[in-house]
Length: 396
Image 1 (spheres, rainbow, N blue to C red):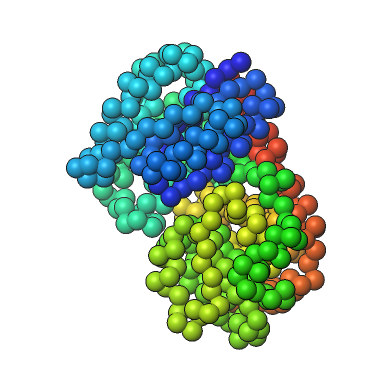
Image 2: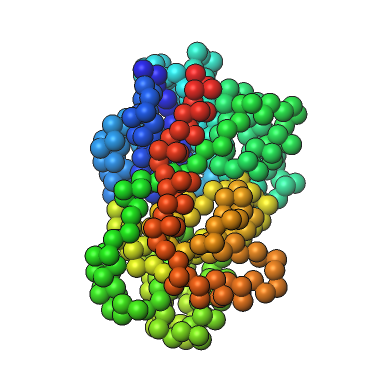
């Protein structure tokens, strides 16, 4: 058996650990002799940590939560956390005989760059293009010291790592173009797989949730599930729904999110009776998705988005829901280009809203089973685990 240490840094509202990574790691353990350890740095509430810890125990994953300091301010607190974590991680590696260290994204990579040298190997999860996302959406200047520092840290680990995983072919191309040398053989694309038995449409759930929301059986339900913010296409979703509502007044837009305040502040008054905002647990998500007739997977296609693989896209398709997805996001175009059950939203096309409305009109003809089969082929947890194993075996 070989031990893998996954190191991640997560905000208080994310459920990636128990919702995405742990199920994939558990599947890898079923398919191989690898054993996963997780160290999660977070400033999440105790309730959230207990949920994650419970999930880890259920899936036979060794889990440790480490608190991120937030005082005297978030910047200084984060630096204190990073540098105080280094001796802890060194000791953890020795104590648990870790064979592969697997930092996810930029802050864990800063830690790993400063670990003592040992016999372990490094598998760098370069998840997305996080530094470029800060430029596109958070105001980070490329001329700033912070940008230069973060890029140097990322580049150092990209060179040092025996293996690097990304979520798209475009991300690999981006990294190779920005490295001083290119070794494409150590880069692997992995997928964000989901449990096909968990994300499965259920007629009883459809009926129950429509009753909860006081919706008719023939009410057209638009869905969005996930985070909200500047990169998630709020204005576009509202514009499409508003236009469709003029055609079919018997329609609602259900938004499943932990960012309720963001949504409530931005709902136009005239849409208040047609938009439902709901916060639910990860375990409840399939039940609420079961009412969907069409789903949104919209993102602002800024340059940094070429490294992204939208998690919700797989969930929607496994639930058999026709989906409107942004063009230019990771490898989405390549995956969906020939799928009639999905609409690739070209943000540069002048008539794209009209095209989206035509697609929505056709969704009544689509077959849920057909959509689901496509989802299983591309987004099952088994295929995801296999993609990870290709990378892990390369690192062993």
